[in-house]
Length: 149
Image (tube, rainbow, N blue to C red):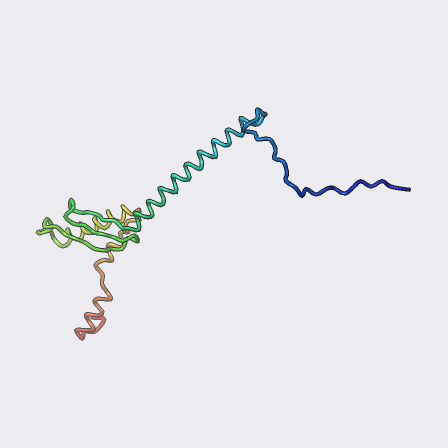
């Protein structure tokens, strides 16, 4: 019995011809391809706009921000991480009580952090500003007082 064997499949070693371009032919999928193309272009344009906005926000945050309190009489500058880089006070603060000055300075700090998009201080953080156990311990040591007194 002699079996006829088919020749082995030929490997494509040369250039392959491309299928017809659906954008140039009037095929049944042309409208669908055009809709997909428009959707992809619109999505890419939005992504590029979002990227540009994000890069601008990062650059602005890296430069830091300045916040104001008491109509600009108190200004607090923060770095890109929201840490205080400096503060300035105008002559309008004369006559303020320490609590009022503290409040206006914290308001300016909150304004600066808000301009960076950082979260505000928590109420507990503000209450802890008046407690100074480390500073008190150092002063007690320097003055020779007992640490529990």
